[in-house]
Image (tube, rainbow, N blue to C red; front, side, top):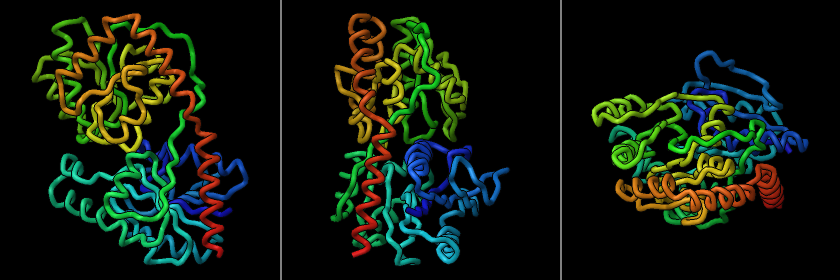
Amino acid sequence: MNILVINWQDWENPYAGGAEVYLYEIFSRLIKKGHKVMLLCSRAKGQRRHDSIDGFEIFRIGSRNTFNFFAPFAMRALLRHRKIDIIIDDLNKIPFYSTAFTRKRILPTLMHLFRGTIYRETNFLFASYVFITERLIGFLYPRMNFVAISNSTAKDLREIGIRNKIYVVHSGIPVRRYAGHRKREENLVAYVGRVKAYKSIDHFVQAVVSVAKQKRIRAMIVGDGDALDHLKSLAKSLRVGIDFPGFVSEAEKYRVYETARVIVQPSIKEGWGLTAIEAQSCGSPVVCADSPGLREVVVHDKTGFLYEYGNIDALAARIVELLEDSPKWRQFSVAARKWASQFSWDRAADKFERVLVEETRLHGR
């Protein structure tokens, strides 16, 4: 099968996040199964316009801010010069309007919808543009079936009017090349992931202030993003000690998972809590906001805790509980590893392949 994927960026782009991990893990496996995958994405500074990486043929055009304007025309050019059986249109923030430019079978794929949370992330004008275009997805992709990364995202699609079939294909966790028996830091609590405003990492900073009054704690915020400077300023103003190592390698990320006592995810919304699943696969209990996407990745009071989003006192109390109650922590750690082990990228890729076969068969009728 010849597959064209349209995504905002590739996994080597500095702004790559969970959507790019999903893209790489799923489609690199499909390449190994014999499928041909082309990727159309934006171009970051220093990246080549045409590239071949791990079996992907990559075409990069425009910048992060202009890619959606160039994408439809580049797609049409590729359709003239390449045999393509199906197009994967990754709807991340802004649709690519691909249905207006081709009659080829299109499978829209979503990590999550921002909906009202976009107003926490950017200025009113751009947020309104994103909000309105998300509301138009049903109109822009009529008669299309969808792939959602989680049941929460599928529910959001239903709520904006999508009535066609929605396949749910969860993320997996990688085979742990860096697995080892590292000693836990009994007081280490960390956030791991992109540093964005809507992820509400400021709640974690405030919770650390409360926890530090009760327990000796070492806190870390691991990752990079446009909210980083604000969080550093907040930590300084609150006089709380937090380490900010910035972007780290995969090996270092897993070192944090394997040595941390607790991982925290306070976001108001996620498509799927990939870092929470990764942490649990390392035996680290996770304290998550009871938010869409996140509530699917933690088994409350078994592999971690869910707390009411925005309730700083509840977040701090759950962190303290896992720092102080070692028997409970050990139970959670064992259960977390078992729970996370069911999420496999191989199984996810197999399911996505079955979806592609069904979609191309339906289109061929």
